[in-house]
Length: 359
Ligand code: NAD
Image 1 (cartoon, protein in one colour):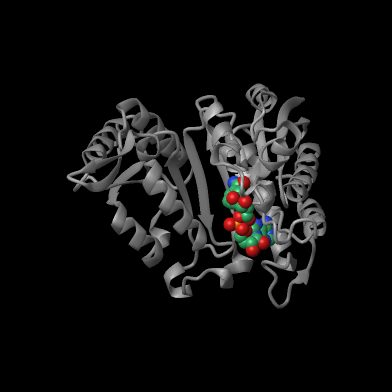
Image 2 (cartoon, protein in one colour):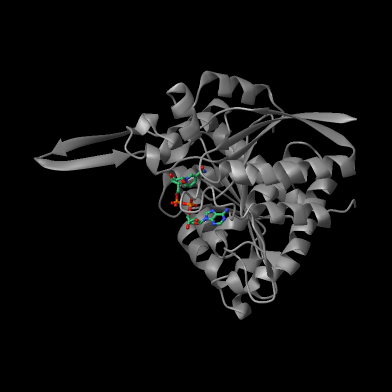
């Protein structure tokens, strides 16, 4: 029987509540699909500051590096908001991404049929459905380039530099192509090659790499057009691959067209594909401790973990199907609509477990 070692970083706010439900679903999935999971826990974010004085203790890094995969709840909250930047919970998040060399961030955006009405897009724009995967480069580009301030003729100025190397572009392009191969075999590379030199190198490199993936249909789109196309005709996209800055903006836009922050999962991958999985939402301090948080984004993050790090695609699909089935009958307060049973966080976890079937 296969055995996986998973580190849980429950974090702050609703983090412990939603991770508990995701673990419940993972345990039921393991029973159904004949694998076992050994859990370890480590501190990250506000809880780590309270217990160890730093947002990312070394012990947490060591445990995560040794694991097959990492599941994160969320970090942050008002209690730690006045601390200096390098001691805030969010610094722990950036730190763990760096320590694990997580260079590829995957964010799906899709319509959940029972929540169709939650999308801000009109029905005729959604045209049936959409299922997009945004692949964002996470450890290079302008967020990590040279930056500074200077004074030119008495006028204050500041600059940030966008730089990409060919190997950095090659490895993120490969992630995009390989994902497209497993989906609808369409990859859109997004850049600003009409203006930026770094984008021209990006485009040349993606075209070179495309020769290794003749079964994937590659197209290129300028970032401004892509931002527009996402709300004009989202169903044209399958996988989008782009730089850190463009991906930051486009992945938020893409995820919000599905309408519900409590539903969206994400994965951050490294060369070893071990990866860190987390919901895209934060620690929701306004509802923490009330037991009403929506655990589905975290549960869907577990499905991504099974697909991308643990090589259990059927188990991943079973969880996604169970989530859809659960939504047909019930919703947590954030997604509840007429005709649904209103359930709390724990009841939603139980319902997903109840709907899980082996495929
Ligand atoms: P947030 O995502 O925590 O909350 C925004 C709104 O969405 C709130 O009204 C919240 O109640 C609701 N919401 C979020 N997740 C929900 C869920 N699962 N179920 C039901 N409702 C949900 O964003 P915020 O309020 O801007 O940030 C709160 C804290 O989280 C801050 O400290 C911020 O820095 C941190 N944060 C952490 C992460 C992360 O850990 N990856 C991401 C974003 C924000």
